Image 1 (cartoon, rainbow, N blue to C red):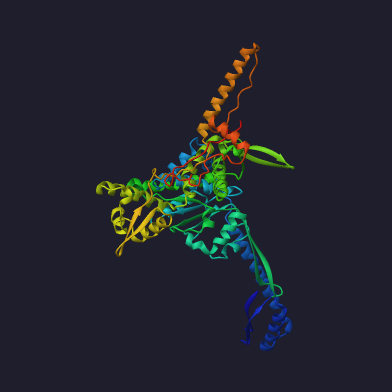
Image 2: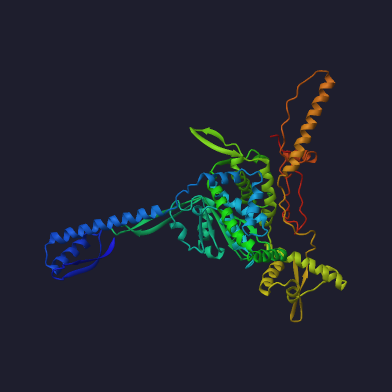
Length: 560
């Protein structure tokens, strides 16, 4: 407790001032002795006053600590009307569609998949292992607007936003200040110094650091341990093409729509904001934001059980899918957690404790599959989305140029200037993406004098749409289950007729799985040895635009 202390005799005007540590006995004694000589008073008087100062300083410290504790955000109490409106939202039959429409009413144009995925990822903060999301786009494409739209729907007391973080800042945030909260950082570049700590927090769920400091009583150096408890949901934005791979494979990657049609829609929305209807929409935005924040406050951190977990399928051709598979499963859990007021809360007793949980439904898996095709299909692509967009545009442009010049597509040569004029892309942007296409052998470089020309090596087998092979098709699974049940009942009735004895068949149970027939053969082959793999495991079975996606038949899934 280092302070500057002044003692003054008002009668004589004599005073003594010095800096000392009030918890250091030798420094206090030296101060008292010097003050007695300077003021010419009794030793007991200065000693008594020094003790009063010490007690007063300790009281001030306690008051400061209490003020910090009271400043921590407390649980928000909802009125009966607000709670009823929030419950009505959470019980809505088309809750996912309602979320997208409400975000659109708040001024976000398009981006329905990204918005719904971001909302679900933010909801996953209440799970034991939340998801993380990275929003990637070019400058001024709207990545910050997308993040702000999603964060605006989350309660203020459950989100923490920073512009940048230093390397050691995460370790000193407080033990529970990040637990089950959203940590949003404006730009990935602003968190590169803290990337190591963020990766540990995502993987281990906690941070620990040993730091050296002085003991308050003795003043001697000692080692202290600082701990930060997770889990935490991480949200980042970036304009960078090359992102830290270790951080990238821990996140779902959302890419902003940069098409001309999207830009025109944004311009129309901006013009609409200048009208009277746009002014009234601002008030509606405040209502919808408060409604969704209240709905999020009502969500309980329940456990989620997936009764179809062992029947699900996923790519297994790369080691990184070990993490991506967990993202897929957590996405399903987030969907179920968001619909908890539409599900029965079940209880299980284990070792004297009661666990409350809800179960995943087929509809949850179907929605997760639809989002996974768009999001995980792009995440598992080895090519950044902007680079792939340029490749598709080049394919169309080269095709037109080949027809106009009466050449084959592989014979067309073009310069960077030609592309810049045709596609209206910036020169710096083209340099980055063309260099990547050259490295990945989608383009070939020719030199003609002092000029470099490019040639296209990609045949463009399809439109380059994102698709994640190997996911369970719920619609086909239900159809297969119905057909299988019908065949079983027919077989049973034929057997009854053949032996002349009447038997009552047990009711059939639905099957969650793929097609029958050829998949049974694949199942028998898989049982004979490890050579047979279940679903699309080809090296390039992720993105249609790269090579044609191929998949092998899956074995039949067992009955539910």
